[in-house]
Amino acid sequence: MSAGLTVSVVIVSHNRAQVLRRCLLGVSQLRYPRFEVVVVADAAGRAALRGLPFAAQAKLIAFEDANISAARNAGIAAAAGDVVAFLDDDAVPEPTWLTHLVAAFADPAVAAAGGYVRGRNGISFQSRAATVDGEGREVPLDLDPGRITLLTARPGRAIKTEGTNMAVRRAVLADLGGFDPRYRFFLDETDLNLRLAERGAVTALVPLAQVHHGFAVSARRRADRAPRDLSEIGASWAVFLSRHCPEARRAEVWADIQARERRRLLRHMVAGRLEPHDVTRLLAGLRTGHAKGRARQPVPQEPLPEPGTPFRPVSLRPDARSVLLAGRAWARRRLHQQARIELSAGNTVTLFRFSPTALFHRVRFAEDGIWEQTGGLFGKSTRSQPLLRAWSFAGRVRAEAERQRATRGFDAAACFKPHEAEKLR
Image 1 (tube, rainbow, N blue to C red):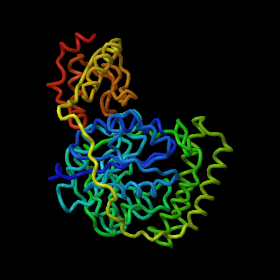
Image 2 (image 1 turned 180 degrees about the vertical axis):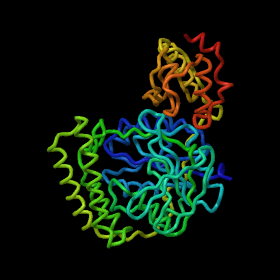
Image 3 (image 1 turned 60 degrees about the vertical axis):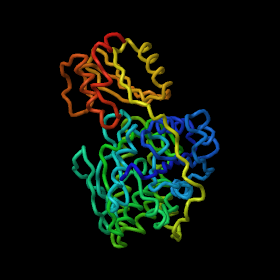
Image 4 (image 1 turned 90 degrees about the horizontal axis):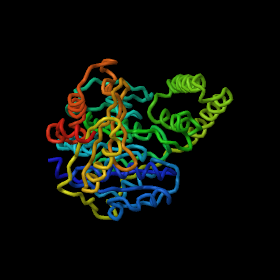
């Protein structure tokens, strides 16, 4: 049974202490019964754990280099769980994330699993189900959003999982030698997907295992998502194509990649986020990185050893609940006061604040640990909804609660009654 599996959650962070702290606050609200947390971070990132609920229980691995693959391998080396789950430092998991993701491993044939990723508005999906080939081309898959789908990969066509929301059996990872450290920033998980495909591995795609990914500021990306540097992207493409793409196709594929990056940069320029000289500089960096990547020699990936430290489970409050509070937009202070009371009791809190407008909805995990959804009573949440729809306040709350019930972990009927919202106004 999946509930009996132990899980190591590995989080890598470099020069992003503030977002790491927010990520770990979200991790502290996970409801899976048996997991440990392994944080591989620089000094500032390790200091960010101070004061968090499970700070003393987390495994901290000092790692100063900006190499996500090598850092993940350091995390795997310390991971003592049956399954290793990966989460980016600028992501926050839904409280049920591990419960859904690890359920896939109840089938002993499953080697890896991946979930869905929501984007910056907390509602639209950034990535869902797809396959990927040796040229890096992805093909979307149309899956049942309410169930786990098992897919068997074949050489040259892998089941795509995202590094910010994926899990692999530790024994499989160890046998593969972990991630290839030549990928310092990009395509690391795609390379792993294709190496799993070479073995004909079974990968589970789990739509209800969801994380929210914000694309935090980094040395390579600004807050508006405009790139600062493309050299490591170029380097990773060189390594990837040399490993997975037939030699006769590499030049054409590389030309297509450069054209795609140029179009992306031009979109940023038209939007006013880049200047023409930035486009020239960034494309030059892409090409320079590609040349450096071609010079990176393959690294022997020997099987990883058994973990050097025992499993260190995070202690959770067994009576913790997922609570829903709802009120009008102008009741913000009172709603937050009640939310803080629930948080102090160890509960996960979702707060709905709806205005009498047609504003689109947004979901965010705030710095204080509250899940907050705001928007107009008559506006869209999922983008497939009509632009404008008449709702009663209680009806809208019930609909939004039901939409998130399986991922947020609350029972709409138990957590919300219309008269309670009226009192909170």
